[in-house]
Image (cartoon, rainbow, N blue to C red; front, side, top):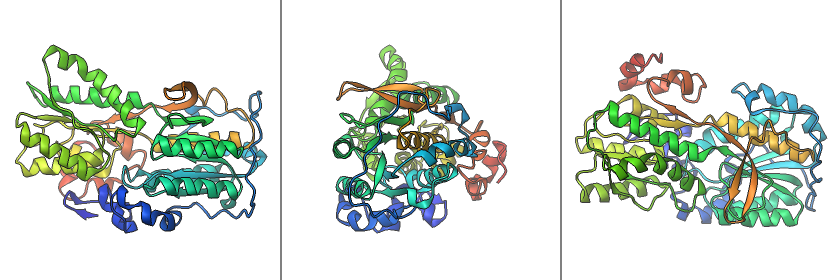
Length: 428
């Protein structure tokens, strides 16, 4: 879209908070009233054709290994591994209901998660009547209502990216009482009762981000880093894990006095709020010359603000996450050191595979369930699929996000970014 950050993406794929205009909603606080009537229309792989009025009862998992194993290493951007699960899909009962959280914390849910999830289960042989994909548009009440409705219509498995742990635990308690399994997707529900958790290794995401900032300080010749350390929303367990990762990397630099931690605002995933937090601190502390920013969405308005203050390229290191088009262009132009790229096609296939095993009453193989994560609230160890992120800079942009068709080269390299793309070996 056309925005004050430049022209990028067709209107449907607009990034940042402006995408909310597509649904005639604003920030999360204002979403609740409209989400109940609009959310189901936003993203749906289908409308459930089941008319079952009683909740589905999930067959207990067997203790034996499934007939058809799949490994994390089998997953790729061609989705070929999913075709190997057709016998698992045919053995399943009930529907799979995916409930995504919002369009504000990241537009990835519209652009990638929903279509990739649809592609994954379809490749495994499910028809449109076997699954639904919806987005709660930032409303806890809507997310719970969607879960209730899906269970009533015959869902045997829910794949839920909870808006927060409170909303997730409410859904999981209800699902458990109705014999329905839940898979935590992308965010772990603290205090929950899910069967599995699928995400990227979020501590590693933060570590990669912190290491990227360290490298950038050297490359951009920042001799005395005065850092503002920003965070995501306090209610998001992922944000806590990201911070654990990058705080661990930066701690020795702060303790030794090589770097100075000037400020650490409360944290948010709302880009306008992140900008406000930054402006307040930048005004109060003119010595700030670098920023740990936890994602590209929050970073975009901050970088635009810095440009308006006359900050020159490759003098003020910033970080990001999600490999958004704007973030990648900010990297090419020298205002962002790099971004954490999480190949979402891996996460969606892992979640789809787990849902198929659970739906069929089969035990997911250890080659897929490659880790465990501690639920510190429930004091339980959660069987998990954890995937590895990548740090993207101009040096590897062509071999990562472009090769994966995550961002089209012709859009990335449009206008003023053409020369930087050529320098990075990217042909638009």
